Picture 1 (cartoon, helix red, strand yellow):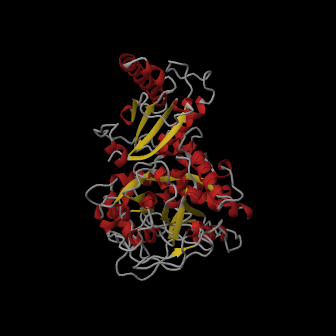
Picture 2: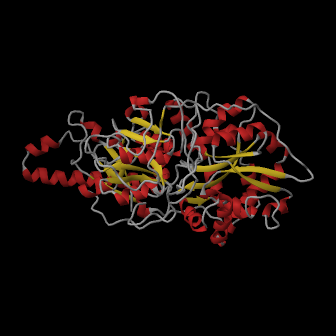
Picture 3: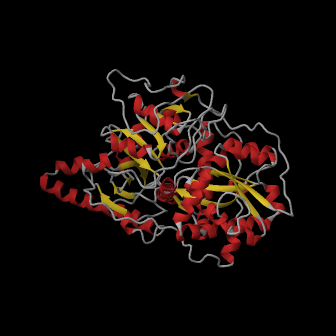
Length: 578
């Protein structure tokens, strides 16, 4: 969330960036000599091909193009950037290989990238190297080598060739790689969620952009096939838009997207990560944060997957990995300073920078994993996987999707739950004090709203009861609202009730007193309808009364003056609380 200072957890460093991954724009970290190490989140990326929307693809630099007299913004980690073309589905360049295993010295090669979410496994292993006497994995009969591979393509190729037993990734990244890996019989098996990104990713917009819907027809800078890409596709879909309704300009890295946005006034928004999303908005009054993963707290999930042959051959090792990482969650909570020091040693960054990194990820314990793997969870594994497959499929990056059931393996997590392990690791509850806002004010709607989604709900005339017999689509509508509220678990949800406006002119013709009385009744009816929807949602979100607000608009907010029945609806507004 934005404020007057950089978000404490909004700093994650990498050395720099160099060659792009040809043909696939996943968020790779590329290295180059740089006297000032930039700060990053889950990765960067690049691609080749034609850029959609006709945007230029011949790079940028310290003077990226723009309108005459356009403001050049400050507050970006780097000044240079390179634009790239649109990429297709990922392709691996290595053949399938057998994994290596030495029973005399059993060592799991576990790639990770530079990201705060790996704090628990770094803590559990007492660093990156295998064999530390303090590693919790020794009691489970094996060692772990944490191998730093920032480039996700290289990670997938190490996994496919047998050089590594596991692979890291955000869940949307695993969905991108799974079809290619399935072709060679190596469908990834996801056993554990390690974190949610909660503050590291975000969207910065020009001040004229008031909500996600305002992005229609606008130009957005981003790193494709990355958490940034999935994030913006998800938010566009929530308001009924797609990639075809906007113009994407792709850069080689997420920091490049920030630089392009800062230097070219023709770019209306950028999707990037900390610290740029915060320094841009704190340095320049003409831009603002539209959304971050602090409010969209259940959108980007980090997981790890194992080779299916290795998991089948060594189920005890898989269980030991899962259990050890959960122990690492406790170690991180008990002594974050020590974990930051271990991270600093492996990432080669200052300890203070690594301490700052930890604030952008929420480490998920056993109860969080059980909740995430629940098929009924509107923001769980299956829902997130299906969302990524659907959005990337429509975009053209996934041609032959793999189902969630083929990838997810809950055996280790549910086994630990059955043993009543880690009873103190409760599921996260994101709490906040609602801001004191005039919910109908222009100031709030222009400064705080992320998005507004309209849902038609049929009611009996002059009634506010939710009735599936009256509206057979009601369960699906409530599920859509629930899913939205679950993804934006760090935001306020405002439910606005509206009514059919067909009788308004008739009552107005009856005189001022009748009109005033009926306006009062209509206002009450719209409030009761909003209250009904709120009450239904609170059954799914017990204890979150302060996050859901219901208001009635009466006749004041029609969306169609001809087809009056379209005004019989609820509007769901997602509002940043800070």
